[in-house]
Image (cartoon, rainbow, N blue to C red; front, top):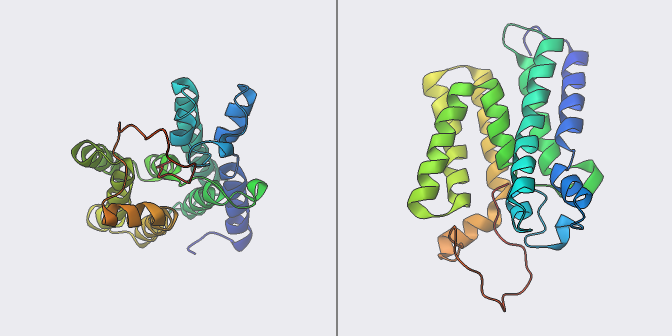
Length: 217
């Protein structure tokens, strides 16, 4: 792992995971008196499900905090344990992503990681982050599916890292993020293939049962 000592790698991973596992969506909605966000919509703790409460301000705050916690973890570890390759930062950023998706405080049932994905990319690989954000927006606008935008952006990240950076650490980091995004969106992928993935802005039928819905947190 380059010049990074083992204890520094472990400390970076622990720091990242603990920061990433803070369930801001749950904390914010409870503090606002809206109850448990896991009891509505998809049951997810990310910004998309928070938006279903009707509070755009809380959804925006959730998105910023979920993306920011991963960015902070990466930058903080990189500062504490500086190396030429920035290994500590990538370890902390990846661990923060894992923490958001699988938080120990919520029995490892967390968000889908899209906000955290973009936060950690912008902090560690800003060029890749900007390119992936543009792809997400373009795909979401063309196909009106937020989840598809996230999947396209995630798939593009390792490819962009290979051609634009060509560094094994950066490429491996992007591969890890992409794999986790796809794992967390497995239900969305099935619905996309079946043609049943709801479109952005589509109204839900009043009689629709309360089942997990596609999100892109």
